Image (cartoon, rainbow, N blue to C red; front, side, top):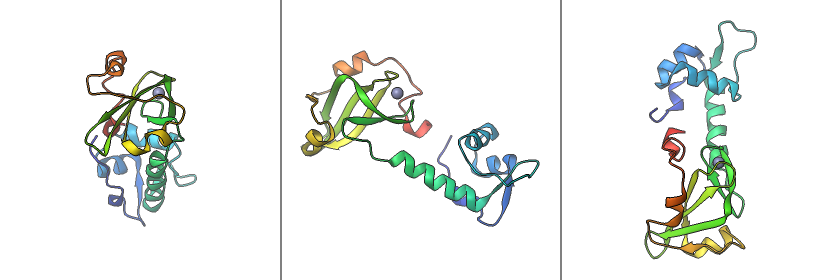
Length: 157
Ligand SMILES: [Zn+2]
């Protein structure tokens, strides 16, 4: 699925599942999944109709929810779709440069590798009480991660 441009759904128009899917370049089952996730539909309309403005509002809310900052000690798991703590309290930091780098941990629930960019100066605040290991790849967490090609790719989520 490519990047979705919610503005293609004109505010004052209504769309069937098929029309909205076509417009946004997604499969109609994706639109049906959104409806199950809470995308509002027009009351009583058969077949289902979705109002452009309601789609845009819902999409913005969903996007913001995904950007919701994790609590300290948590990272966002794209498989569980929510912030999760690190399995075994193990977190690694791979510096990209002298200022920022990449925090990595395995999800406590599903074992998916979680990533997060972080400033090195912020590690203690982001991961309080955890002994964050500073490494260069390849790391022991990479070796422990279960192969799950679809689960740690935010663009595919
Ligand atoms: Zn998970």
